[in-house]
Length: 317
Image (cartoon, rainbow, N blue to C red; front, side, top):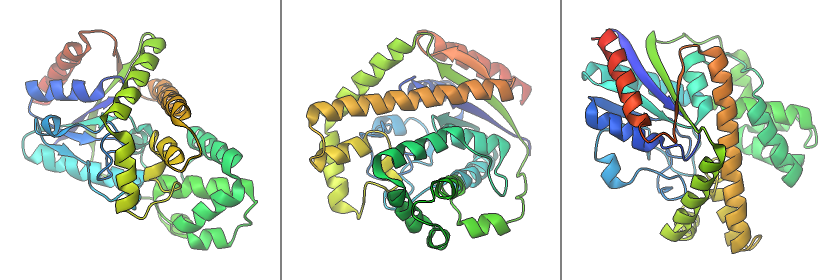
């Protein structure tokens, strides 16, 4: 059985969900979410999760699959996505992988070596966290993820803590397992159609981000995070609460920032996320010459993507 799948990537607020649903209305598609926040149950408003009506339009996968107390790795995503691509194809449908977690796309296409190469964006994120919280706090986070690795490191050994956290976050495995593990099988051969949404005017994307964050606040984002804190055993360093918006709301509920600071920091963090996602796209263009990019600000972009997908599907008919 020949496997083929569509990839639809892009920065936050670029309209990926709406575009994916447009394609699903026109074509026999099942959607696989490529989003590290949508995997968590009960994190709906702050993650911009599709609502019940949107989810009912076509089958969706990798949404609401784990508790906010758990973690989800790029390696687990790759295994789940490959399995789902095979299952969806067997049902006579086309898998559409849509989302903005670029590390997941990279892992799906390129795989994970035993020890992943340095990830500049993730390292910058870890360094930024260390600048705010200190390396001992990140050492404590490593201890929660991989107690054996943390026990071998000094709480102030910045370089080794950074690398250990990077590997564990990417692979979802203890360091010892990564070092001992033989290279994985490459998995099934899959023909991908990589598509990207990107803004021709970044200021318009920034305005969308601000509008969406304001809409989240109006929709009850504060109550959502209050409920999460009551229902689950969470702390601010867990993977779920590191998601953009949730960390800032946590700080607000703890009284560390006021409402104006919450809005400013939440929007700023989301803009930084979009910047990192666009940096990923630039790297993808260099590595994947078949990647096609569409202006998310063009009112006709969904129709243009639809035509590209139809032409591609004819090749696999």
